[in-house]
Length: 354
Length: 194
Image 1 (cartoon, rainbow over the protein chains, first blue to last red):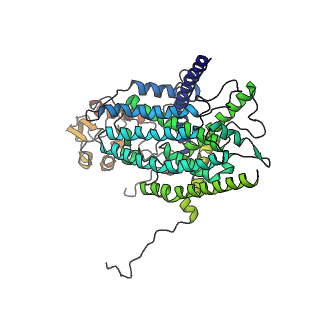
Image 2: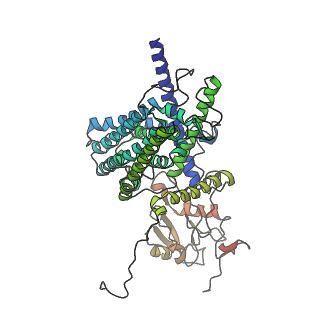
């Protein structure tokens, strides 16, 4: 019995890793396309035309082949063990965050449990913990490169990520308090109920929490407007200046995996996960409902990813002091107020209404 | 200037409203701008991209690209080897070796035995064109100037004359032949000096 569960989990891991890696490749294409459109250009549209493939759909393969086949330069002056370790930390931490993310309905009564590590009671805590491990990849890369630009990049990254961990965690706590659980699938189930006919999505229950979470999530993914660690214009490439070929590709992959994870968490915490109001309920276990739910969560995640890219091509980079001001002077106090208010209201409701 | 000078104007940084300090209205406004551009490209096809090898960019008529050595009606180079262009050239990229003109060319004393332009040194300022008294050297609209070696990019007389053959119909000489009517704001004007 247990051996079959183990095999099932292994298959799920393989499928998920395959799907996410493939998605990352195509996300790069999507990002380039959106960048082009936002700048009144067309974007990549040539690759694969001679083979009859439209919309440059082979471009990600070409990009991947380029990454793999390029010369892998290791400068002489780097601290080699750390230099080699850093990209692996970046990609591994980005990938293991997926373990507790429910990418579809979960529970023992479903035909497939759409979660790699089911019933992790501290799901969201795990995601946060692993997410903050990713900063080691950046810092070690910046340190081991033995290069001023990389070092400044790593330094900025550490300060930024530590600052933004706080509002990130605090903004989630409101949702956790309301749903009464750290388990991501329980948080989804809570959001499927209706409050006077309105779906209780997190974004309606915790609007401030959502804004704070989404903003800090940008900082966590190291993307514009918070991409200070790599800021090309000031720091050449920041922490990955000295990396080439697939090592650089791994940082890149890690960044996009982070985007996927963040989008999943956003959708699960604040947009009801697989919930489609008045259509899906946690009790439905038939296979067609399962497919529908997976489709709904996938579409929601896609929209979130496209929104993140849209933001990237809209906002300029924050200055370092503005970044710190925003985190320590605005977001952390707001998150604290949000948390205290939510806790008080939840306590009042639990005491007097039920 | 002293600090209490009456002409001194003190500028305060603009006070940000609460909304400004929270960035969100500005972020929304920015998103609308980029969103409009994205949708315009998707729906109305407003992209400014030129699909290069298939669609050629047509530069403005005053564009200064590859040089050409003009020929006269008899197919001789118009150049009289007066060295004015080489003197005017700020990049020193023109090298002319003049020689006495053949007996059969009674209209001039000299002609260029060799006329070499280093297209890599040239800064495409058009001073040679301005300096030339016989309109022998001109900058064409050819912009796709490429080569596999530095030697290849040093254009000699034959090559410069062949550029003229290529561009003869596309770009009639701006002063000797008036451009066809109705070519808009790019028409050559008559020189006020002559």
